[in-house]
Image 1 (cartoon, rainbow, N blue to C red):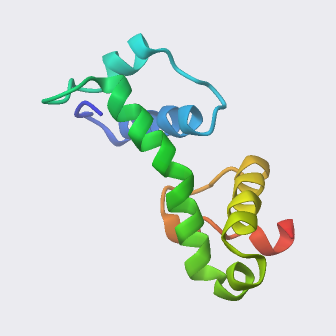
Image 2 (tube, rainbow, N blue to C red; image 1 turned 180 degrees about the vertical axis):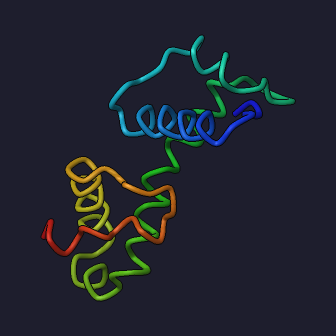
Length: 108
């Protein structure tokens, strides 16, 4: 995102991006173009699509690290589906991936 001058602005930017990634408030291409600098090649929407598609994959990897036995028992596809349902029910409370599964045990 464009450089912010205060931590409050950074917090707002992070919340907006997370809401967009989670589908809570999907922004238009124009809104994203306003918030992000144009990349050296391609456009903001192309870069956003790459980032957004990798978001769930990164959460799955983080949860696999925290719950390896569950991942082994369920298998790749079922664990990925579980992660998607979990994230939809329990939005991340932190921007740190290490905290992503903090409520998975109670969700199960």
